[in-house]
Length: 200
Length: 153
Image (cartoon, rainbow over all chains, first blue to last red; front, side, top):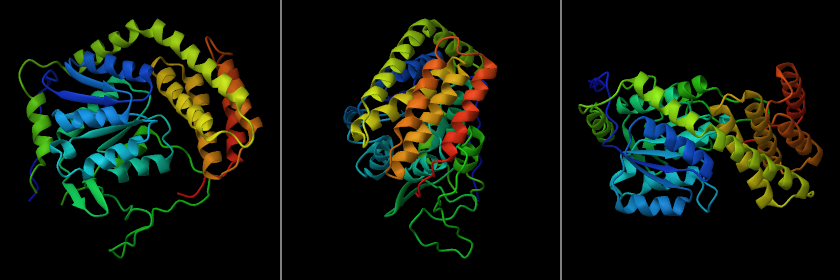
Protein backbone atom coordinates (compact mmCIF):
# COMPACT_ATOMS: atom_id res chain seq x y z
CA UNK A 1 0.00 0.00 0.00
CA UNK A 2 1.36 3.40 -0.97
CA UNK A 3 1.66 6.08 1.69
CA UNK A 4 0.11 9.39 0.80
CA UNK A 5 2.48 12.26 0.04
CA UNK A 6 3.13 14.64 2.94
CA UNK A 7 0.57 17.41 3.20
CA UNK A 8 2.22 20.80 2.98
CA UNK A 9 0.98 24.05 4.42
CA UNK A 10 0.15 27.01 2.18
CA UNK A 11 2.90 28.93 3.94
CA UNK A 12 6.26 27.20 3.77
CA UNK A 13 9.26 27.88 5.96
CA UNK A 14 12.65 27.55 4.29
CA UNK A 15 14.57 29.24 7.09
CA UNK A 16 15.77 26.04 8.73
CA UNK A 17 17.00 24.34 5.58
CA UNK A 18 20.70 23.78 5.04
CA UNK A 19 21.30 24.17 1.34
CA UNK A 20 24.41 23.58 -0.73
CA UNK A 21 24.84 25.15 -4.17
CA UNK A 22 27.58 24.13 -6.59
CA UNK A 23 27.99 26.16 -9.76
CA UNK A 24 31.24 26.94 -11.55
CA UNK A 25 29.96 30.29 -12.81
CA UNK A 26 30.13 32.85 -10.01
CA UNK A 27 27.54 34.96 -11.75
CA UNK A 28 25.04 32.11 -11.97
CA UNK A 29 25.81 31.13 -8.40
CA UNK A 30 24.98 34.67 -7.34
CA UNK A 31 21.66 34.62 -9.24
CA UNK A 32 20.74 31.31 -7.64
CA UNK A 33 21.58 32.76 -4.23
CA UNK A 34 19.35 35.78 -4.94
CA UNK A 35 16.43 33.46 -5.60
CA UNK A 36 17.07 31.24 -2.58
CA UNK A 37 17.52 34.14 -0.18
CA UNK A 38 14.24 35.50 -1.56
CA UNK A 39 12.71 32.24 -0.32
CA UNK A 40 14.23 33.12 3.10
CA UNK A 41 16.76 30.32 3.03
CA UNK A 42 19.35 31.35 5.61
CA UNK A 43 21.94 28.63 5.44
CA UNK A 44 23.37 28.53 1.93
CA UNK A 45 26.84 27.13 1.33
CA UNK A 46 28.07 28.21 -2.11
CA UNK A 47 30.82 26.52 -4.05
CA UNK A 48 32.35 26.90 -7.50
CA UNK A 49 34.51 23.78 -7.17
CA UNK A 50 33.12 20.28 -6.75
CA UNK A 51 35.99 19.21 -4.52
CA UNK A 52 35.29 21.97 -2.00
CA UNK A 53 31.57 21.18 -2.09
CA UNK A 54 32.37 17.56 -1.43
CA UNK A 55 34.49 18.45 1.60
CA UNK A 56 31.52 20.41 2.97
CA UNK A 57 29.19 17.46 2.46
CA UNK A 58 31.53 15.23 4.41
CA UNK A 59 31.26 17.38 7.52
CA UNK A 60 28.00 19.31 7.42
CA UNK A 61 24.37 18.19 7.25
CA UNK A 62 22.59 19.32 4.09
CA UNK A 63 18.85 19.18 3.33
CA UNK A 64 18.86 20.19 -0.31
CA UNK A 65 21.43 20.36 -3.09
CA UNK A 66 21.54 22.52 -6.20
CA UNK A 67 24.12 21.42 -8.72
CA UNK A 68 24.82 23.47 -11.82
CA UNK A 69 27.81 23.09 -14.08
CA UNK A 70 31.07 21.93 -12.60
CA UNK A 71 34.19 22.36 -14.68
CA UNK A 72 36.70 20.84 -12.27
CA UNK A 73 37.98 17.29 -12.25
CA UNK A 74 34.55 16.14 -11.12
CA UNK A 75 31.74 17.29 -13.39
CA UNK A 76 28.19 17.79 -12.15
CA UNK A 77 27.09 14.30 -13.13
CA UNK A 78 30.07 12.66 -11.44
CA UNK A 79 29.50 14.76 -8.32
CA UNK A 80 25.96 13.48 -7.89
CA UNK A 81 26.95 9.93 -8.83
CA UNK A 82 29.69 9.97 -6.18
CA UNK A 83 27.27 11.34 -3.60
CA UNK A 84 24.70 8.65 -4.26
CA UNK A 85 27.31 5.93 -3.86
CA UNK A 86 28.93 7.34 -0.71
CA UNK A 87 27.55 4.77 1.71
CA UNK A 88 29.20 6.44 4.72
CA UNK A 89 27.65 9.80 3.99
CA UNK A 90 24.43 10.67 5.83
CA UNK A 91 23.46 13.02 3.02
CA UNK A 92 23.68 10.50 0.19
CA UNK A 93 19.90 10.40 -0.27
CA UNK A 94 19.40 14.16 -0.02
CA UNK A 95 17.27 15.70 -2.80
CA UNK A 96 19.58 16.99 -5.52
CA UNK A 97 18.33 19.37 -8.20
CA UNK A 98 20.50 19.53 -11.28
CA UNK A 99 20.37 22.85 -13.11
CA UNK A 100 21.27 22.79 -16.75
CA UNK A 101 21.19 25.29 -19.57
CA UNK A 102 21.73 22.76 -22.30
CA UNK A 103 18.78 20.42 -22.05
CA UNK A 104 19.58 18.13 -24.92
CA UNK A 105 17.87 14.82 -24.23
CA UNK A 106 21.17 13.02 -23.74
CA UNK A 107 22.13 15.45 -20.97
CA UNK A 108 18.79 15.01 -19.22
CA UNK A 109 19.18 11.24 -19.36
CA UNK A 110 22.70 11.54 -17.98
CA UNK A 111 21.30 13.62 -15.14
CA UNK A 112 18.62 11.08 -14.40
CA UNK A 113 21.04 8.18 -14.57
CA UNK A 114 23.60 9.77 -12.25
CA UNK A 115 20.95 9.95 -9.53
CA UNK A 116 19.70 13.54 -9.67
CA UNK A 117 16.30 13.97 -8.07
CA UNK A 118 15.21 16.54 -10.57
CA UNK A 119 16.49 18.48 -13.56
CA UNK A 120 15.59 22.12 -13.89
CA UNK A 121 16.20 23.85 -17.20
CA UNK A 122 17.90 27.22 -16.93
CA UNK A 123 17.11 30.07 -16.69
CA UNK A 124 16.45 29.74 -13.01
CA UNK A 125 13.03 31.27 -12.57
CA UNK A 126 11.78 31.72 -9.00
CA UNK A 127 8.38 30.11 -9.56
CA UNK A 128 9.85 27.05 -11.23
CA UNK A 129 12.43 26.58 -8.50
CA UNK A 130 9.82 26.99 -5.78
CA UNK A 131 7.54 24.41 -7.34
CA UNK A 132 10.37 21.90 -7.70
CA UNK A 133 11.34 22.21 -4.04
CA UNK A 134 7.72 21.63 -3.09
CA UNK A 135 7.56 18.65 -5.42
CA UNK A 136 10.62 17.14 -3.78
CA UNK A 137 9.05 17.58 -0.36
CA UNK A 138 6.25 15.33 -1.61
CA UNK A 139 8.51 12.91 -3.50
CA UNK A 140 7.58 9.31 -2.73
CA UNK A 141 10.21 7.63 -4.85
CA UNK A 142 12.29 5.00 -3.09
CA UNK A 143 16.03 5.36 -2.96
CA UNK A 144 17.43 2.59 -5.11
CA UNK A 145 20.79 1.18 -4.06
CA UNK A 146 22.08 -1.42 -6.46
CA UNK A 147 25.43 -1.95 -8.17
CA UNK A 148 24.41 -0.31 -11.43
CA UNK A 149 22.51 2.62 -9.96
CA UNK A 150 22.06 4.60 -6.75
CA UNK A 151 19.44 7.31 -6.53
CA UNK A 152 15.72 7.99 -6.69
CA UNK A 153 13.73 5.27 -8.36
CA UNK A 154 13.85 6.07 -12.06
CA UNK A 155 11.78 3.12 -13.23
CA UNK A 156 8.86 5.05 -14.40
CA UNK A 157 7.22 5.47 -17.78
CA UNK A 158 8.19 3.00 -20.47
CA UNK A 159 11.71 4.22 -20.93
CA UNK A 160 13.36 0.96 -19.96
CA UNK A 161 16.81 0.38 -18.54
CA UNK A 162 19.84 2.66 -18.92
CA UNK A 163 21.80 2.52 -22.18
CA UNK A 164 24.08 -0.49 -22.42
CA UNK A 165 22.02 -2.69 -20.11
CA UNK A 166 19.73 -5.50 -21.06
CA UNK A 167 16.19 -5.06 -19.98
CA UNK A 168 14.62 -7.51 -17.59
CA UNK A 169 11.09 -6.99 -18.73
CA UNK A 170 9.58 -7.92 -22.04
CA UNK A 171 8.47 -4.33 -22.60
CA UNK A 172 11.81 -2.72 -21.71
CA UNK A 173 12.92 -0.26 -24.33
CA UNK A 174 16.43 0.72 -25.27
CA UNK A 175 17.57 4.20 -24.33
CA UNK A 176 20.25 4.27 -27.02
CA UNK A 177 19.93 7.39 -29.08
CA UNK A 178 20.91 7.23 -32.69
CA UNK A 179 22.09 9.93 -35.03
CA UNK A 180 18.71 11.41 -35.80
CA UNK A 181 18.45 15.10 -35.19
CA UNK A 182 16.33 15.76 -32.13
CA UNK A 183 14.83 18.77 -30.44
CA UNK A 184 16.08 19.89 -27.08
CA UNK A 185 13.81 19.26 -24.16
CA UNK A 186 11.47 21.78 -22.62
CA UNK A 187 10.96 21.90 -18.85
CA UNK A 188 7.65 20.09 -19.30
CA UNK A 189 9.34 17.29 -21.22
CA UNK A 190 12.07 17.08 -18.59
CA UNK A 191 9.44 16.89 -15.87
CA UNK A 192 7.68 14.11 -17.72
CA UNK A 193 10.96 12.21 -17.86
CA UNK A 194 11.91 12.78 -14.24
CA UNK A 195 8.51 12.45 -12.62
CA UNK A 196 7.46 9.02 -11.52
CA UNK A 197 4.30 7.87 -13.20
CA UNK A 198 3.29 5.56 -10.41
CA UNK A 199 4.68 4.19 -7.20
CA UNK A 200 2.79 0.97 -7.07
CA UNK B 1 5.44 1.82 0.48
CA UNK B 2 6.89 4.18 3.09
CA UNK B 3 7.68 7.80 2.37
CA UNK B 4 11.48 8.01 2.04
CA UNK B 5 13.40 9.58 4.91
CA UNK B 6 14.77 12.47 2.84
CA UNK B 7 11.23 13.45 1.82
CA UNK B 8 9.98 13.28 5.41
CA UNK B 9 12.87 15.43 6.58
CA UNK B 10 12.42 18.10 3.88
CA UNK B 11 8.65 18.18 4.32
CA UNK B 12 8.92 18.44 8.11
CA UNK B 13 11.37 21.33 7.90
CA UNK B 14 9.42 23.45 5.44
CA UNK B 15 6.14 22.75 7.22
CA UNK B 16 7.26 24.59 10.34
CA UNK B 17 5.30 27.68 11.31
CA UNK B 18 6.43 31.13 10.25
CA UNK B 19 6.58 30.44 6.52
CA UNK B 20 5.67 32.47 3.47
CA UNK B 21 3.28 31.85 0.59
CA UNK B 22 4.44 30.98 -2.90
CA UNK B 23 3.50 34.46 -4.09
CA UNK B 24 5.53 36.09 -1.33
CA UNK B 25 8.52 33.86 -2.04
CA UNK B 26 8.42 34.50 -5.79
CA UNK B 27 7.94 38.22 -5.31
CA UNK B 28 10.92 38.49 -2.93
CA UNK B 29 13.14 36.38 -5.21
CA UNK B 30 12.17 38.46 -8.25
CA UNK B 31 12.92 41.67 -6.37
CA UNK B 32 16.34 40.30 -5.40
CA UNK B 33 17.08 39.48 -9.04
CA UNK B 34 16.06 42.98 -10.11
CA UNK B 35 18.42 44.46 -7.53
CA UNK B 36 21.40 42.86 -9.25
CA UNK B 37 20.22 43.34 -12.84
CA UNK B 38 22.60 46.15 -13.74
CA UNK B 39 25.61 44.43 -12.28
CA UNK B 40 24.64 41.15 -13.95
CA UNK B 41 24.18 42.75 -17.37
CA UNK B 42 27.63 44.28 -17.09
CA UNK B 43 29.13 40.91 -16.21
CA UNK B 44 27.17 39.27 -19.00
CA UNK B 45 28.81 41.68 -21.45
CA UNK B 46 32.19 40.65 -20.08
CA UNK B 47 31.27 36.98 -20.56
CA UNK B 48 30.40 37.67 -24.19
CA UNK B 49 33.78 39.32 -24.67
CA UNK B 50 35.42 36.23 -23.21
CA UNK B 51 33.52 34.10 -25.71
CA UNK B 52 34.65 36.37 -28.53
CA UNK B 53 38.29 36.10 -27.40
CA UNK B 54 38.08 32.30 -27.23
CA UNK B 55 36.53 32.22 -30.71
CA UNK B 56 39.40 34.28 -32.12
CA UNK B 57 41.97 31.97 -30.60
CA UNK B 58 40.47 28.69 -31.77
CA UNK B 59 42.44 26.78 -34.35
CA UNK B 60 41.48 23.57 -36.11
CA UNK B 61 41.76 21.15 -34.40
CA UNK B 62 40.92 23.27 -31.37
CA UNK B 63 42.40 23.08 -27.92
CA UNK B 64 40.00 20.84 -25.92
CA UNK B 65 40.30 23.11 -22.87
CA UNK B 66 39.25 26.14 -24.94
CA UNK B 67 36.30 24.20 -26.34
CA UNK B 68 35.22 23.21 -22.82
CA UNK B 69 35.47 26.84 -21.76
CA UNK B 70 33.47 27.97 -24.77
CA UNK B 71 30.73 25.46 -23.93
CA UNK B 72 30.74 26.41 -20.28
CA UNK B 73 30.52 30.16 -20.95
CA UNK B 74 27.74 29.68 -23.52
CA UNK B 75 25.87 27.56 -21.00
CA UNK B 76 26.18 30.39 -18.51
CA UNK B 77 24.81 32.89 -20.99
CA UNK B 78 21.75 30.67 -21.51
CA UNK B 79 21.02 30.81 -17.80
CA UNK B 80 21.84 34.44 -17.13
CA UNK B 81 20.20 36.03 -20.18
CA UNK B 82 17.04 34.01 -19.69
CA UNK B 83 16.57 35.27 -16.15
CA UNK B 84 16.26 38.81 -17.46
CA UNK B 85 14.08 38.01 -20.44
CA UNK B 86 16.81 38.33 -23.09
CA UNK B 87 15.35 35.46 -25.04
CA UNK B 88 17.21 36.15 -28.30
CA UNK B 89 20.60 36.10 -26.60
CA UNK B 90 19.64 33.03 -24.60
CA UNK B 91 18.47 31.18 -27.72
CA UNK B 92 21.67 31.89 -29.67
CA UNK B 93 23.80 30.86 -26.68
CA UNK B 94 21.78 27.66 -26.50
CA UNK B 95 22.41 27.03 -30.17
CA UNK B 96 26.14 27.53 -29.62
CA UNK B 97 26.04 25.01 -26.76
CA UNK B 98 24.31 22.55 -29.03
CA UNK B 99 26.78 23.10 -31.85
CA UNK B 100 29.87 22.72 -29.65
CA UNK B 101 28.39 19.64 -28.01
CA UNK B 102 27.62 18.00 -31.35
CA UNK B 103 31.04 18.83 -32.80
CA UNK B 104 32.74 17.42 -29.72
CA UNK B 105 30.66 14.27 -29.88
CA UNK B 106 31.34 13.54 -33.54
CA UNK B 107 34.99 14.58 -33.04
CA UNK B 108 35.15 17.17 -35.72
CA UNK B 109 35.38 20.95 -35.83
CA UNK B 110 33.79 23.59 -37.99
CA UNK B 111 35.36 26.95 -37.23
CA UNK B 112 33.05 28.87 -39.57
CA UNK B 113 29.87 27.61 -37.92
CA UNK B 114 31.24 28.41 -34.48
CA UNK B 115 32.30 31.89 -35.56
CA UNK B 116 28.87 32.60 -37.07
CA UNK B 117 27.32 31.69 -33.73
CA UNK B 118 29.71 33.92 -31.82
CA UNK B 119 29.07 36.82 -34.20
CA UNK B 120 25.32 36.26 -33.75
CA UNK B 121 25.73 36.30 -29.95
CA UNK B 122 27.47 39.65 -30.14
CA UNK B 123 24.69 40.99 -32.38
CA UNK B 124 22.17 40.11 -29.69
CA UNK B 125 24.02 42.12 -27.06
CA UNK B 126 22.27 45.08 -25.51
CA UNK B 127 19.01 45.94 -27.22
CA UNK B 128 19.74 43.45 -29.99
CA UNK B 129 18.76 43.78 -33.65
CA UNK B 130 15.01 43.75 -33.01
CA UNK B 131 12.55 40.87 -32.73
CA UNK B 132 12.16 40.20 -36.43
CA UNK B 133 15.89 40.05 -37.09
CA UNK B 134 16.42 37.95 -34.00
CA UNK B 135 13.98 35.38 -35.35
CA UNK B 136 15.74 35.36 -38.73
CA UNK B 137 19.12 34.85 -37.07
CA UNK B 138 17.76 32.02 -34.93
CA UNK B 139 16.23 30.32 -37.98
CA UNK B 140 19.49 30.57 -39.90
CA UNK B 141 21.43 29.12 -36.97
CA UNK B 142 18.92 26.29 -36.67
CA UNK B 143 19.51 25.37 -40.32
CA UNK B 144 23.23 25.44 -39.70
CA UNK B 145 22.86 23.25 -36.64
CA UNK B 146 20.68 20.73 -38.45
CA UNK B 147 23.63 19.94 -40.71
CA UNK B 148 25.65 18.67 -37.76
CA UNK B 149 24.52 15.21 -36.65
CA UNK B 150 23.67 14.46 -33.05
CA UNK B 151 26.20 11.93 -31.82
CA UNK B 152 25.29 8.57 -30.40
CA UNK B 153 24.99 8.40 -26.63
